[in-house]
Structures are given as structure tokens and as C-alpha cells.
Amino acid sequence: MAIDTRPRRPEAALIDRLPRQLFIGGHWVDAETDATIETFDPATGQVLTTIPAGTAADVDRAVRAARAAFEDIWRDLNPSARGRCLLRLADLIDENAEELAAIETLDVGKPLTESQYIDMAMTSEVYRYYGGWATKIHGQTLPVSPVVGSAFAYTRREPYGVVGCIVPWNFPFFLTSLKLGPALAAGNTIVLKPAENTSLSSLRLGELIAEAGFPDGVVNIVTGLGREAGQAVAEHPGIDTVSFTGSTATGRGILQASVKTLHPVHLELGGKSPNIVLADANLDDAVQGAFTAIFVNQGQVCCAGSRLYVESSVHEEMVERLAAEAEEIVLGHGLDSDTTMGPLVSRVQQDRVAGYVEAGIAAGATCRTGGGRGEGDLAPGYFYKPTLLTGVRDDMKVAREEIFGPVLSVMSFDDVDEVVRRANDTSYGLAAGIWTQNISKAHRIAHRLQAGTVWINAYNMLDPAAPFGGFKESGFGRDLGEEGLNAYTQTKTVYIGLD
Ligand code: NAD
Image (cartoon, rainbow, N blue to C red; front, side):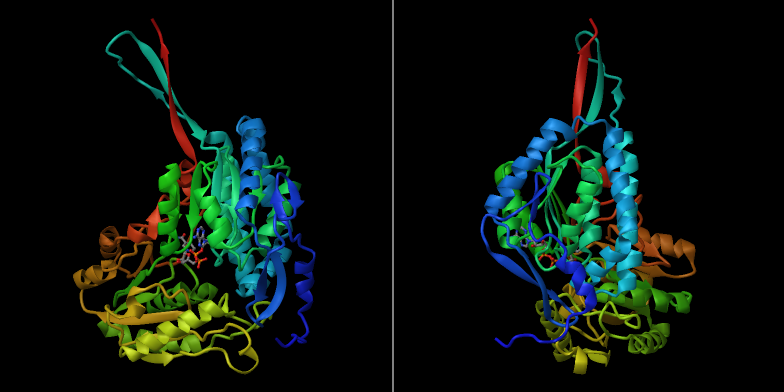
């Protein structure tokens, strides 16, 4: 193979100083084998670095360290001290946000402004939110009426123990916080398996965890392949609950693995979310909303509004305005200041997106704009042009399967009952959007949509206080809010006989 002689970006020096080991028991340690995984800058296709390919033996060491930390210190540490560790971590993320955002952009490809104002800004808020919860986790006193005698009873919400966390590559740092924040606040310890192609920010996270004062072994990080390290986390008998975010196909495997050990699992999976524009919507807002719903993070968003249903009388105007906006997008390296859309995460993802668009066109859809890979200087990277497909039928693959790229299928509809039925005609149920100025109509539609989150005159809005998760094959359990915390506690009932 030819040696890559292209100059590296100066920011790649940030990557060189990251630890390239596993973080176990509070120390950076070598993996059991010398096997490594190459990680690429998706904008250039250049190798950024290599990371250890952890194995089942490494996961086992991490589980032991997490168990010891759980039993020896973390579960009995006073809640205020646990909360302070999380609050300190949130502050450290803010203090290092510029560097963390650059690492995320180099590794994932997204524009630096998105890494800064979405990934990093939201991550520190999540740790801060759950840092506050650590002192507010409480049970109830219960008015019990035993058939014999009398008793006082109360409940305690106790941590499970060791939580296995498996996260995907689209928002690596942020999605990790949705698991670590609540699980740590509740007194659990962690074995984290980041996605193999975007593990770099989790290596920096290990350093910040140590700096924030978490005791050794409370958070352990094992990089590695899904089918090895990930599978080992899913199956390990020493793990008390598994929290997984990723594709529905992998989620099924995680659920199957839990049958042997009977540990509970929390699954945040894929989506094919409908975004509905009624003719009475403020069209300026609807165009902007539909645009960001599909093009932020290059469309690699679980809740992306990838099926746009527009009422027929405004359909053509929406399509024209969206196509014009999409043509203004500047593809480029995420670290370049004029870039408004970066590359997809990998060659595999680029091929997958291209395959879907080809299948859509072959099935009769029309490509109004985009529909191709990056050209010229962009060709070595994994770019795909922002794409609008019209003439899409509900039964086409592009309208049914998750593409996970910057590809929007625009369809028209004539009445509300029809669009609700079509919007719900999917195996997924993660999110949905509605654009209208008729607020009672908006609420009525929101109540009929089968989705874990519905946005009205907004899209992709998330807040640490509001639960997020899926209906149907988009998973079960909720991230964020109080429900996100409950996923990491189990209830114990205590009776005291009073006679
Ligand atoms: P993926 O399922 O391929 O991988 C996710 C994680 O699982 C990675 O860390 C991977 O290494 C690991 N993994 C793979 N095979 C495994 C196995 N056999 N056992 C254990 N772990 C294994 O998903 P992806 O391609 O990284 O991410 C994209 C998917 O994630 C999309 O479907 C997207 O919708 C979904 N997602 C969902 C949410 C949500 O909140 N619902 C958020 C982000 C992404």
C-alpha cells in the first residue's frame, strides 16, 4: 500500500498526546494483546492514530475494578461527594471545551461549531444536571396495612452495581454523558465501551475523570471492536445492567445476550422520524426546522427528520426553498471556518448512504439536489452531498429504512388523518415534528403520533430535564430527566414490625 505523504493538520497534535491505553482501576494500562484499531480523519481518509483493540480479558479486568470500586467506596460515599465529582467534571469539560471539540471534529468529522455548541455544551450540562440529582434520590414511606400486626415500611432507591455502557459514533462524548451522568449520580460504577471508530474523546474523558477526583475504578474505559469488547460487556455475568445506544440490529443482540444473565437492559435505538408541515405553518420557520432536522451532524442523528410530509398546497414551495438552502451548504473539513457540513464518519457509512440514494432513484424517486459523493479535493474524504429526494412513496426503502446520512425524502399529503396514519406506518418510534400555527391541531396530532418525543414548531431540541427515548423498535427505557436516573436504580422495600 502507498505511504500517505499528505501533510497532517496541525490540530492532529492534540491526538498525539492522548493516552493510547485502556483506563482500568484509575490507571492507564496496556491491553492484554497488541492488537490495535486504526482511526481515521473522515475529512481526508488519513489515519489519525491507533487505539487498543480490547478483548474479553480486558473487559473482565475492567469489571473487577468496577466491582471493587462499587463495593469499597462509591456506593457508600455520601451523595454530596458523588455530586461534587460530577459537578467538577462538568466544569473541567467547560474549561477544556475548545480542545475536546477539536478532538471530536477530527474524529467524527462534524463542523467545529457543532462540536462546540452541541456536543460539548450539552455534555457539561448533562453532568451538571445529574450532579444536582445525586443528593435528591430518595424512596417513599408507605402506609402499609399488614393482615397481622402493624408495621412501618419504606423504599430505598439503590444502585444496580456495575453498569456496562456501549455507545455509538455519532455523538460519542455527549451520548456517553447520558449514561455516565445518571448512573454515577445513583452510585453505580462503569465499564464504558466507546464506538471503535470514534473513541478518542473517551480517552480524554478518562483523564478528566481522574482530574475530577472520581475514586479509582469508578469509571473504566475499554476501547475495542463491538463484536469482541462490546459483546464481552453485553454478556459479562459481573455486569448488573447494560445501557446501550446504537442500531436496532445490534440492540436485538444486546437483548439476547441478557437472557443468560437476566440483567436488565436499556436500549436507545434507531429511528425514521416523520416531520409534518401543515399549510398554515410559518414556512420560514418550517424550512429552517426541516433543514436542521436532517442536515445537522450530516444527518447522522438517531432522531433525524428524514421523512418530510408537506401539505400539498405548500409542497412545491417547501421543496424549492429547501433545495436552494441545501445548495448553499459548504462541504469541507470540520475544522475549516467556512465549512457548514463535514464528511460522514466512515467509508462504510458513505457507501451505505450512496446505496440508499441509488436505490431510491431506481425505485422512481427524483433527486432534486445532491445525490453524490464529494468531488475534487474532497474525494479522499467520506463526503456526501446534502440530498433531497421527491416523488418518494411510503413503501420505498428510502422512506422505510434508517439511512443515517444527509438524505431527505419529501412527500406530500392532503389531510391530517392521512398524514398521521402514514407517519405512524413505521417500525420505529423515536421522534416526530409538527409545523403549524393552529395550536389545538398541533396538540391533537402530537397525541396521536407514535413517538417518544414530539416537537411542535421546533426540532432536535433536547434538555437534560426532559426524557428522551423510543417507542416500538426505537428501544425502551429513557435517557435524561428523572426517568433517565430511574434506569440506574432498583427499588428495595424495608419493613419494620411495630408490635
Ligand atoms: P452500532 O449498533 O453498529 O454500534 C453501537 C455500539 O455497539 C458501538 O460501540 C459498537 O462497537 C457496539 N457493538 C457493535 N456490535 C456489537 C455486539 N455484537 N455486541 C456489543 N456491542 C456491539 O451503531 P452505530 O452504527 O455505531 O450507531 C448508529 C445507530 O445508533 C443508528 O441506528 C442510530 O439511530 C442509533 N442511535 C440511537 C440513539 C438514541 O438515542 N436512540 C442515539 C444515537 C444513535
